[in-house]
Amino acid sequence: MLTGWMVEGRGRRMTLPALAAVLAMLMNGCASGSPESSETVPVTQTVAQVLPASSGGAGSVALVALTADEQFFLDQSVQVLASECMKKQGLAYQPTATQQRGAQSNGDPTADQLRQGYQISKSAKETNLKDVNAERLNALTGDQRQAWDAAFFGDPSKRVAVTFPDGSTISDGGNGCLADARAQIYGSVPASLVSDHAPAFLVGDKARNALMQRSDYRSVVTNWQQCLARKGVDVSPQADIGLDEALRQYGLLPRAEADAYAARLAPADAACQRATGIHELRARLLQENATTLKSSSGLDAAGVILLRRQSVERARAIVLAGGTTATTP
Image (cartoon, rainbow, N blue to C red; front, side, top):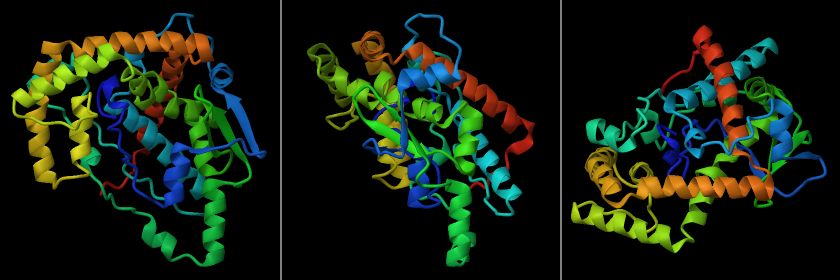
């Protein structure tokens, strides 16, 4: 997630190594219907359950996204707590490198880009990160692996879920070491789902898809793309944020070529943002969208900001207390 709200969008890439396909699914929640075994919790109820009431203001969507450091602390603390939980049960899980810490924004994305480029972390460039637990897990017998899965992932019938403004339901394991770790950091498993997925409606894919329905935004996006083309940098037709486009290249091009593309794009993007005003327009429209969401669905940006802020504080305390034991690929 790197720096700035803008990277909570189309270019967001999974940086957790693939312990297994099901681990990636459970770490981020999985979309589903409303299974009878799930406790479906509306977003507003979830926020209210785990947080004091917000100030009542609309909440600046610019504060919803996380810096690279904040995301590192959240991911790493969950890994560490899950490992400690497994150890207490006589089972092993090695905390895995999640997100390398990166430079924080000074609040002006264009100034940052002109001075130092996008500052994309090493782990964000990886497409095939090593699973440090794979060898150990593959050596387990069937019964041992079943016991390990039960301890780590919990009872598959004990799931909790959150319903989001578009009617989608996202669920996650309600018990087990992974769920317990997430609950310790976020306040509850439903709260962790809100923290993970609500930003999509405020600053991420879903919010920006809504913006692309507006002719005024599409017009400025076109101007921005044409500005980049005049500077010799091409982006995909659907691109509206330079950093997302740079990140996308790491899944398409060899590392050196992707690095070179990002180095060319960053200063051109900064200049074209300033020339077209796309950053300011996007910020204003996203704020308007957040106000509409609060009124129509109860999804409160201020509540999400507070939820994430408190979670980061808990996570930072755990990691800085000496819990960082991840193995970096």
